[in-house]
Length: 316
Ligand code: SF4
Image (tube, rainbow, N blue to C red; front, side, top):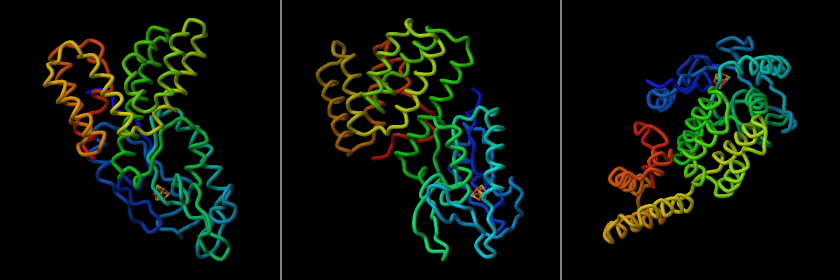
């Protein structure tokens, strides 16, 4: 078994009874499906900063850029306590080698976006970021983050999983002796995956790799990592994927019969029009890659970016 991907997660999503009312918010996809490939590092900001279970519920209040964390009934301000703890906790988390974080949505401590911010009368007036989530994202700006609500959307789920699996492979490259050859190999295997997320980054990263010898190793790795995470942060679309599929079809120009070409073209067109899922043309191409032993495509992560058990790429 390959080493599992390490992800931070809000403890209540794993079923931990840590919520203000002593309950949890277990997400079975995360524990049972994704959990097969992931080792979670649970974090409950409210309990870990010293609050009890059960406890008074809290909300964000005041200036959306720097709201206060305040208890609902007795109006105690927990902001300083939470921020002090969060600043220490993110430093501890550096040692974990996380490839991402899954936050609990809507929580004033853990929510990564669209958390209600209320005025002094308790009326929701704006949306913002939970207190710990903000400190975490500022400390790890390139780490993939999502919340359990957004992960129910198949496209966002796929995108997040693309990013964490790629970051894990990239970390393996970093763990080896750094050298231009390793980086070029990694880039070669990920070219089509990058193209499916961002043609602009694909071109930029191609230029960077071509100039690899002109840069110091440190600069090369840093710039490559930034572009890699930026590119994968952009969502794939049927148009971008169809472009990659057509690109791959070009490798079989000489081998496919006219019937096979027509079938592949039709599958690509039907996918692009969102009549069939991406897995259909991908399965066809994987079949041709095996049949004709196409050396360049055989190594492309794009064709098998994550385990089939995750059932991705099969939505329209
Ligand atoms: S949302 Fe965050 S702070 Fe609240 S119980 Fe879950 S992990 Fe703890």
